[in-house]
Length: 260
Image (tube, rainbow, N blue to C red; front, side, top):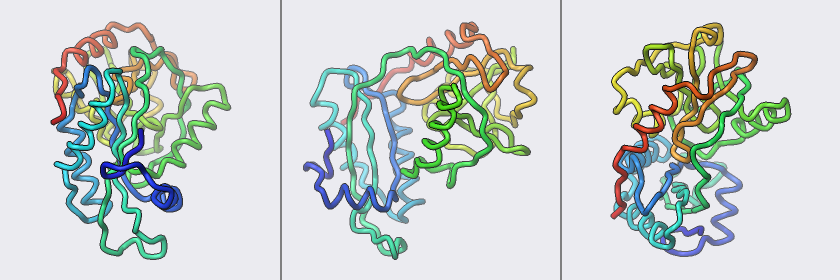
């Protein structure tokens, strides 16, 4: 399903989004008609709309469009809400913006996901704190990692340390605490939920040379929850470490919210 403000998306609007690629979004997993961290997704959309467009997002309309998408199926789905302005011109993006809401859906992937091997890559996403539609760099680096025999790419900077994956946050377990990298990255909804329910979480710089001291590594996002990382480059991790099952179980216990 693709709908823009309660109607089917038109060719002109698709062309506008494709040509400029200027916008932001959030992606959420819908199970049984409910969503974990729904309030955090809405807060992200409102915050990013101010950053990207200098405008206030109509969250009541977002809620209505989300309900329409959820009510169309009883299956587990991934809903993506993209905010963009089809009338924003390429030569003058600083013009007054009137953001529109694009709702798209796809089947939800099976969970839990199996472990993945990731390739460390020196990279920092532009405007890393915003979940923006500029995915070229991330997908290009993911493609390169897959061509090298890995499943995905993990971004890092020499002095800043590890930041995030191509479309996911990364966490570690040092034997005592869950460690979230402190480098600039997109603040993930799943990361925030896990931090809120696990009493032993810290945020600090994590560098590549510190990886051998970590007992476990994992990826998180709203689509898959918690996914084990079995290797970062040549550094292996236990994909069956007990902390991974603990995090998955605690995440599953979070009460999802019904959109309304």
